Length: 214
Image 1 (cartoon, one colour):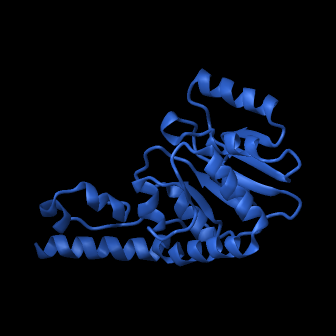
Image 2 (cartoon, helix red, strand yellow):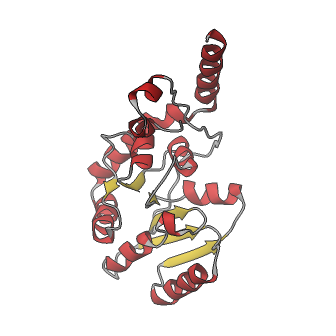
């Protein structure tokens, strides 16, 4: 399985036979956000199960003078999503939808952002969380099992599913409360080693060794 909370979905019999292998990321960028605006990144193709507009809805609730922007990266897979992107672009000048970009470009945007928002309704184990952890970008995530399994139960950056008011408060706290932001940075650093390429290779070797032992 890709993350630890998935074990809870299994019977005790299957749980004993299951191993966790976290996906890895070999991204080598380091976190370097700008100083003029607090940037919130949303990365991934726009699908309903990702609840893709939660971050811009949260942005819309923040004071208009707050120097915050949301940069959304990912292709729209249907006309309805595309229309919603365009509507939000007209409604909220602090929102930018960049569409589909190369992986390298997406990682550079991530590294230059203050936080990543992962607002998924359902999640198996988002690879962009691995990438954020490797770079050192704090994640603000919906409290669903797939996100909790990647970030840990004690991670301080969760918000309730579909709750843009709570997300807005969390973004504003990250922007204005330096101690809380440092706490998030420390928490994501503690997860970094889990998503290292060598850690994934070691986990797969242990798995294969166990299969040969059986």
